[in-house]
Figure: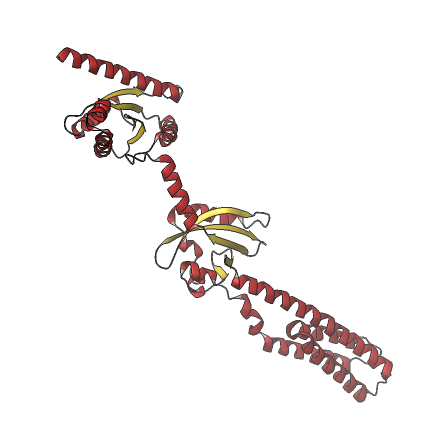
Length: 387
């Protein structure tokens, strides 16, 4: 059920009621005039009220029709009561009535012209313009909504607009709409997702204000911009060769996981992984073979890790693995799975460090690197002794 009707319908809803109301006013005034014994009473001046009402509703023509009726009723009273109004009296009354009709009618015409211009801008705007009430319903939308999301105005205004909002954005949207109850609050650069008629989600960028009675808003579809931003972000944080997150993404994720571990008190381990003998593969079989080994290893490790773990390529043959909520014994199991998943005949060295919850993250990473160097040195020693 639509909660409110379009503003464009309001002036066509009550012309008959206005005519009846004005007629009743004329009748009451003329009755009062006939009942009053004082011919000098200024009761006739009350005719300006229904004249103004007609001018407000129907413009100058309506006001002048009211003037003619008021002058006719004044003349009728003068004839019946034999009151000598005189030409000056009629001129004074007529001038007053006509002035009211013309001034009010002119103001109405100007207002209608501005309203028509505003309506045209509202209708032809490429932005998604709308008016909404504080019950959560659109009361007016322009054609851009249909072009963007595929809904008709009746479909948009027939249900709460929160039903179109993405679940992940709903709480923020409700809070922003509640804040607009204050006319001093202004929404700028607010982004959320709206469901289109075909089920897809569109990112909208909003600006809105209210007058304390209704919300006036405009939105732009920025879905393509968000897609490009996502692609650029992916390019900036993804290793081109392996498809893994790169060093930049690694540094951001380490900070996030450290904050989470600090709040929860759960353990956080960092493992530095280095492919053994990648240089030999490049020298003997070519860099293409080395690249294939890097890609195969990265894919295998992704399968071996837990869903909560995070792996990134830090450069060359070095990788970093974050192991949230993981103790050393569990880390050994995960690392062993990584070893079993390696392409046949290839090995890696690993150094693990546990964050104490207080030390700078740079120190944690240095300790993991140091553990890696020690593991590689031990691997070289064992390899040499085996010969």
